[in-house]
Length: 388
Image: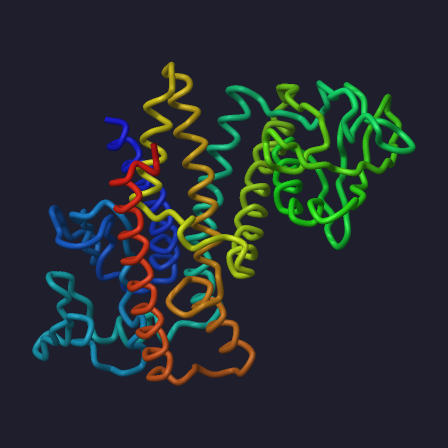
């Protein structure tokens, strides 16, 4: 059951993403051949409003297949699986029929660059909205952990900070060190900052500048993080854990958005570390790994409330992560298409469609190879029990 729940979570996230593209495609009257959830063979489908709605066998992925996407400008509608009915002047896409005039005037390739960009941006935007709603519900249910110190270890770097030692009750407002600064609003941001700068602090006595709020007074002090031999990581010797329940709707929304901003920030910084070679590619998890991790976490939950919180937390994190990853400006992803639309706006005319089709096809092929490798690694990790 826990695995089924995890798969449903992924399905909902993908559905919301594709719903974003679909909604604005319909607003701009772009013909949508098929709106599908899942990949592979159809197991159920129906046609309504000139669109086929499909549920497919593999519960990963989905699509909003717009007419004119990728083969824009070629005029070869049959390349998308369409069959031209010359008598009715219509193109039949497996039971979905559009007039040639509709296609020529509104297909994805001929609409304005602004409309293209909005359609492509809407998928990630819907995911961010979903993530925000989940985070706001979590804030309502349990509140948030504010970055307020509730414990200071004796003889720790925190206690030896100069000119002010860190004390119980201090609220951490900002952390900074060489070339890195982080405004702190949630306790998780402290953990992320320390993790990202762990290698720097390991090398030598590097000062960590800490801005704290104490008795309505803002103070600046310096801490020299040290390696904790037990934990095998750099620490400053403080505990955080004050649970805060927002007092009004404005605060609830504010802290829910803070959570989403944290997820966006951590995803971007993780990508930078991956590019810099500080993360092993073997540490990446795909859909199977994600389902395994979620399923295991849900299985460990001890109450209905804990299960709901776990589901909401995973849904928010993965939804925001999907949004950020899709906005990477490489061909075949939403970010690449937005970049393409931006270039068209600047130069004032459409790019060469054959070149765009070729580049997108090559990029999609490489992405499929990457996905297959990730799927393979996921299966291997499941078999050796790495996700337990």
